Amino acid sequence: MMQTIINQLKRHQTFLLASHIHPDGDAIGSVLALGLALKAMGKKVQLFNPSPIPMVYRFLPSVLEIKQTLAPDVRFDVALVLDCGDIDRIGAEAVAICKRSLVINIDHHITNTRFGDLQFIDVNACATAEILYHLIQKLPVQIDCAMATAIYTGILTDTGSFRFSNTNRSAFAICEKMIGLGADPYQVAQHVYGTYSLGRIKLLNLALDSLEISPNGKLSVMTLSQRMLRETGTQAEDIDGIINYARRIEDVKVAALIHELCDNGTAPRGKTRYHVSLRSDSGVDVAKIAAQFGGGGHAEAAGFSIDTTLTDLKKQLMQLSEAFSDACEAV
Ligand code: 5GP
Ligand code: MN
Image (cartoon, rainbow, N blue to C red; front, top):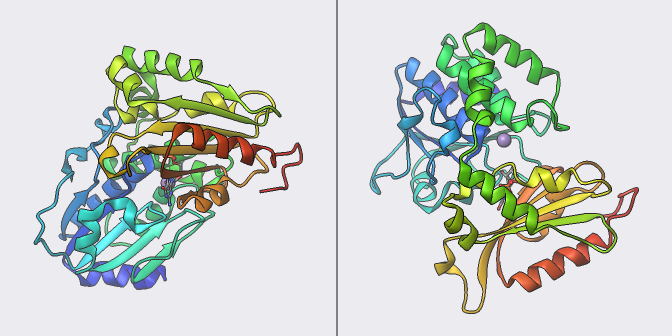
């Protein structure tokens, strides 16, 4: 399948590269790495993400080429959808454009719906950037410092700095090569993890204050509202990483972070739209839980969005926690 995709990349001229809403380092790094590689091959590329690029990733070379809007009548030979378990995660605007293109789905999420005309899905890859490294190596281009920095950032962030269970030999081997090609680990770490705005620290304080633990101690829940974001002058991107505090608590098997979304216009009367992030350290498969609610992700990091009330949502999560035992074979 990799070869078929390579043939298509060589054959065609115009490409849309898109990744998921609320992008993380892997979504952004993947789009940049492959986008720059195709550009180096003389192709015409358009990089897209439905959300603004978080401040911490704005240091990446060429990141401003990732646009948040697309001309409605624009056409591309190929649409490359990267790091998305579900095509809807690139937003309606880009989904509409995909209807007129050859769609190539490259991803590492276990819940991938296998959308598109061609797929390359490797659930053992630590990051989509790992898959793209292998792909770019087979293209007639040299990986330059910008591509190396993008790939390094994708792997560093998706493995939680080589701490999560998806950390594999390739993560280290590829990152070592990327450093040889010019990626600067200190610079990347400084940008991604080294500085917090004061608002983000205040938001963390509110999140810690909102912590609730299920009666059996196995589930931790944090809740962040739009009001808290307003009060601290923060954005949705500042929530990234906060859930790890809830996950580290002793005896906790699953951590949930409920985040009230701002696109509440779509929620039915009396309900609010929430995004729920889920994390587990071992045993509980949170991708399965997220899939039950129409979302997806990885066994140990997943999410979903839902129109509901906060009371009902917390009740549902607390009920689920009753199945989290010490062995945690259930769920
Ligand atoms: P988070 O919820 O922290 O944003 O994301 C955790 C993981 O779950 C990421 O790998 C993300 O791509 C995936 N994920 C989060 N929300 C959704 C969703 O609504 N649908 C799908 N398919 N995956 C999701
Ligand atoms: Mn990823």
